[in-house]
Image (cartoon, rainbow, N blue to C red; front, side, top):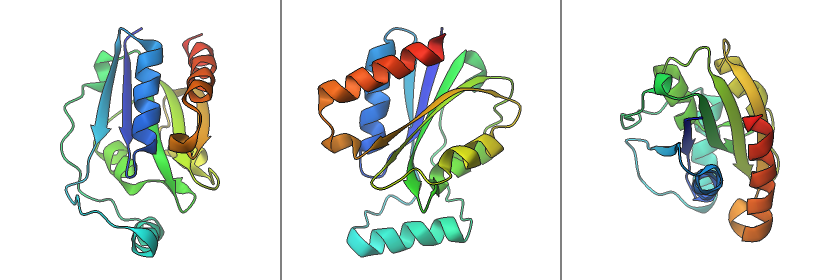
Amino acid sequence: MKTAVIYYSLDGNSALVAETIKATIGIGADTFEIKTKDNKKRKGFVKILWGGAQVMFGKKPPIVPLSVDVNAYDLIILGTPVWAGSPAPAMVSFLDKTAINGKKIALFCCHGGGQGKVFEKLKALLKGNTIAGEIDFRNASKEDRTALKQKIDQWAKNIAA
């Protein structure tokens, strides 16, 4: 099964999970990172305020064009951090610009406190597709790598079925 792992990562948690998923799935898995055109690094309270405001005001930041043909893949895995209980605006921008229809989709999110309504909101943006599974990771970069890999291994088996 040809698989695309498409993710946005601000602090590296979603990138870590995406790369671990790719390593678990192995041959036939390609990763694609969504990047915003605004690559300014924000820290601390400013980062939280900036990210929350983007979600609350429905901002869709401009993203760097991603060279992925979603139609070439059997399974598309989408990953995002949770911002104010929602998918990161960069992921929303990607989904807004990319027609994904009739595909098998799996979802993951990374957060420091809770997944909020991220999966509900992603599913609403992905109507016309089959959602094969979802999984969340709390503080993925702080999790034991062996435990993280085991969690992903089990999830990958479930979505591949």
